[in-house]
Length: 433
Ligand code: GDP
Ligand code: GDP
Image (tube, rainbow, N blue to C red; front, side, top):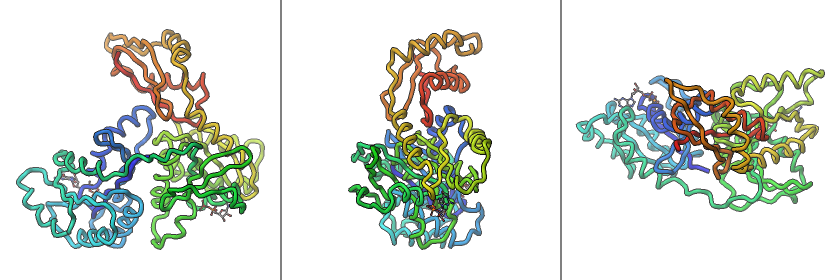
């Protein structure tokens, strides 16, 4: 898992500018491979090999100067709850404001690691103006310009140190995150699985603060469940529950091997569920889609097919994700859902032997080589699957930069055609040889 960093601050201090700068490189890679549309407020970044997730909390606020203080406070409280490190952004041009002060007060009330970033210090003449922000009482103050990038390296060095170190308690069994919108039936699903027989459930040591980890071992199934359900009921802040459920899902998804994306069939596979789906896919987790409350649907022989088609069209270009129609209430196909999740996790760990892969792929490439560009021919010499946690394939060739997305997708599809990677995101890399 990677650490979570949240950017907070009042409107117009430059949060989204900084956010975009931090995720730039990573997002480009994701987009290139999967053609995924960007989620503007959440992304991955890394500094000197330390990977982390970034959330732009302001992205969920109206972009206006007269946002209510209360709204800003809620974002900050959530960020404190969810993040490992807070980046508190202020604006040197505006100087210190009352809103900055009240955000600082909230942060001081918690013990959350905070870096104070004085933004818009576009040139060294402005550095003196940043001094007034020392009165906010933060030990770590940095001047930077999100627009031109100066000063970002300094705070990133410290940030990388403050992030939690890689989780060393590697689980020996598959880890499943049950995610979805509020009221989709996540708790019901988990209850129908573990029932009231709590003796089959042992709480795993080292349980993180909020998410509930339970180990399940029965009927030949052994796995760990990461549950985000129910948590929201404990919170005192009433706010945008969608934003909240997304924030909650991020950590659960990152800690999992496979995500069970569950939705209420009556509400449909709407944009909020799609967001959660993309969070899982972007994080390269195995995915199973669970169509819940199947008992409430009056159906004929076409119904499930129609729903499958609708989902397919909404997750394109990702295809080939297992869909299971379940009822958490009547327990219909609950175990099928788990069986499928186990299979997806197995496939995600599968390694194709290099010789087999080359014997299969090289003749196909020979048949349909990459299109030539400006009279130059790309020659792919060999390929192999990398020894990574999820399927990544490297193709070695003379001119990797000439291979574009459509051909990468072609290669991916050839692999998928011959090996079952249903529910598993795949990466294709072109490398110079
Ligand atoms: P947010 O509301 O906090 O997300 O702020 P934005 O990122 O939307 O930025 C607000 C305005 O400040 C935009 O016009 C940005 O171009 C500008 N801005 C952001 N960072 C900098 C910076 O480092 N220097 C200068 N001069 N302007 C910046
Ligand atoms: P969560 O917020 O995702 O954990 O959702 P809950 O498990 O609390 O369920 C929300 C509501 O949907 C509750 O009233 C459940 O009884 C109901 N519900 C959950 N699963 C099903 C199902 O499969 N069929 C029907 N009819 N109702 C369900």
